[in-house]
Image (tube, rainbow over all chains, first blue to last red):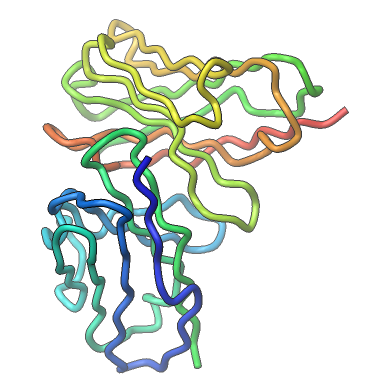
Length: 107
Length: 119
């Protein structure tokens, strides 16, 4: 199985900051990587698919990059609504494993 | 708009079985693969199972292989997760999700149904 590892596990930042979350795969997933946002008590929402393709309606301050085994989710100009937990997921091969999550907290 | 509504959760004793259902609407159900994902309260997401649009392909996480079975009924716009030999560690919120049109990322999610395994 492909293991997905996110760092950091927790990230403290302020409104307006630019932050990045890293996701590493134990073997290459090419660009078959998605990012999800989850707020407390809610289901996750798709943010980005195929590494860098923004889901419809997702603000352009979110961006994704990388390939192979290392990926990043960047949020430029944090807004209050962005404080949530973020998960990466590879969908190159089943089982379609998630990272353990990164909780983005207000500093 | 796409809607996915899970049902069937509740309290179940260890060793017993339970079937979760997910009713889909707002899209042509038979065109899309479907997933089940779970989340232990306060923990991360765990992908469980996928079924292809026509039901011919199924895959499972190792943690549930042999105990959980995914199925679908395209005539009813339903996907199911049959769970057997339930354990305390299966206690979680269970989500169904629709795949992308050609790729199995999780495009749309239901709101979840809680399964509690307890005597």
